[in-house]
Length: 220
Image 1: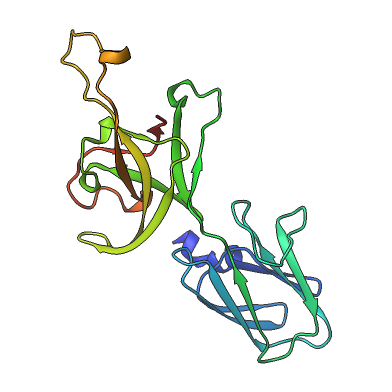
Image 2: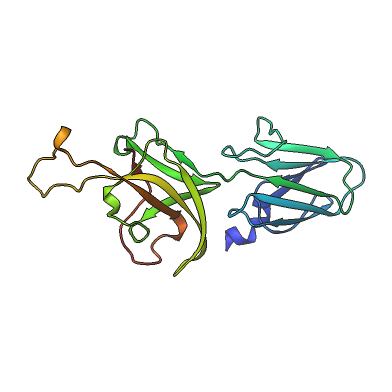
């Protein structure tokens, strides 16, 4: 309840002759004498449209946060991560911010022993995870392929609803031998087969079969 009651302070703040937008949610921003309508489908899509409903007289600055993982078209953020647009805004003026939501592979810090040789997937502000129900083979037998291509797929899933999946190029590794038997290596080892690993937003996991889940996948 404390977060909900103070949400407006996280979304936008007003300064001297400026309005800074920190988080992108649909609604109305009232700050510093300005009233802005915000239309967006973020984080599923990266377009954020601002319409000035009313504005204080004279020039003032609209400051927009550009996350480190994104570009923002022709806007260049400053050292603080905000792009500034200063002009004499008038009622009816519009401005569109396009954030790049291209999915990306991220790697852990090299000093985290348990995660060496692994990688995870992010898209926009969302961390993704892999659930067994979305794979066509055992999750523990999958590894992300070198330079894995990532593709987004919009879908409605039972128990989840609307979401955006990320499909990643992967390799299906040979199954592990029974306990007590050695791994086969070299020319006698079974080859890895090409496969696809499918990821869902982490916050949506465990709403279907309750099977295996992992965020960090080994790199082949």
